[in-house]
Structures are given as structure tokens and as C-alpha cells.
Length: 84
Image (cartoon, rainbow, N blue to C red; front, side, top):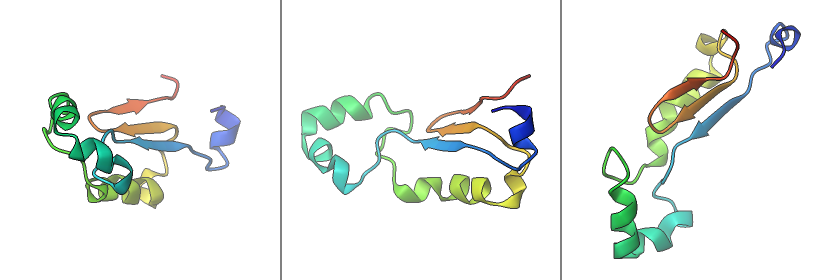
């Protein structure tokens, strides 16, 4: 994102959580072999839940994140996409 765009309070955010227990993933959850393979790669050793990301969403939508621009919130780490 260009510096002049940031002065207009523009920002882009992504939340990339990984595997979440939703209707979309029901087939994966029900397939025991596939679910075991997926869970073995998840550091928390469980399926995520939509509620797990409420804090990140509230933060990014609030004035508290006014200085934040171009962030990706993944299931494990925060990556900054700006210039240093």
C-alpha cells in the first residue's frame, strides 16, 4: 500500500485461520482418517471455531488498529506487510 493511501485511513486486513469447524468442513471432520491427518498438523490439535477470531476481528475493526495497515492474521502468527 502506498504511503499517500495510508493518509486516507485506508487499510487491508485478512484473517487466515486454517481449518474451522463449520458446515463447509463437515465432510473433512466426519472422515476420521482425513481428520486425524489434518489435526496432526494443527498446533492446537483441534478444529478452530468461528469464536476463536472474535478478538482479532474486533481489534481490526476498532480505532485501536488505526495505525495498523496491511496485516494478515493467520492461525499462528501476525505478518506485517508494510515497509520497514
